[in-house]
Image (spheres, rainbow, N blue to C red):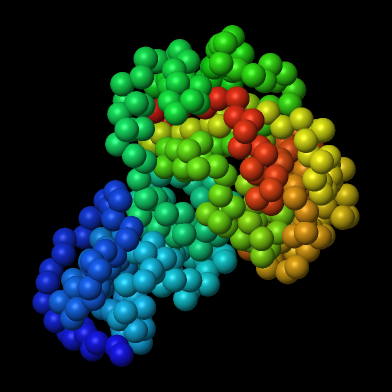
Length: 361
């Protein structure tokens, strides 16, 4: 039986808007016994977090008023913020608005500075507004452990240290010389490295939160987003095969925040043990897969364990026009891992991790 909640009572509390990291506040913990008081406390916390993120308190309350109070407490804050954001489908940018103004208009936010100020303008429009709001919610409701943060803050720079059996190099920032591979040479020279053939190395760029989750619990396809290059209704874990490319990507996506590059050894022999789709020629087959994936249509890539192909050069035009055909970059390739059985094998082949504490452009 649902216990009625007086939604009007929640309007009386004023919560100062501030985009903050909520740390481990992702569960609504109301104890073993559910009472009217604990339900009210749990839902008040949910509404407070929605407002801190930047959503309209009144609109969020109106939206959740049709949901059973007990059911609201059965899911995490992250779940409900994503569910609320999903009611707005914004797959393109409005050229009559600035990016921050369009995010505010689309999702009824108080501010979008926490998104647009942390990403280069060039990369911002390579993804959709829905992509960025989902990414921001993940950042808001998750946090790296205090142990890992302390390790990063206190690690000696430009040398190989070990955290949870993983070789890690910490340096101050991505610089003009980062793409020269000095950090990679340090990983090659360490006795901890089992994989000495750089020709089979692949690189994944991410943030501190995701990096710790990956090397602690393994790659999770569940946190990926749909409607990317390979699979409109299935998610993928994307990697590049050139170190310089991930450096360039890190500079664009992580402005002023830590950037992490995870290096894996993935030989062709491993991929051949699974269902692997090679679209490296960038032909009509590749165009069909990418166009369908980006437009939420079933495609060939959905049934494969991995896909290798060129990257797209005209993402922005594809977001503006769903009929735009993708164009292949002759110099940039990517590998997408698409099945848990393959990612489980790749989890065992981490070469090491490079952490750039402050990324400045």
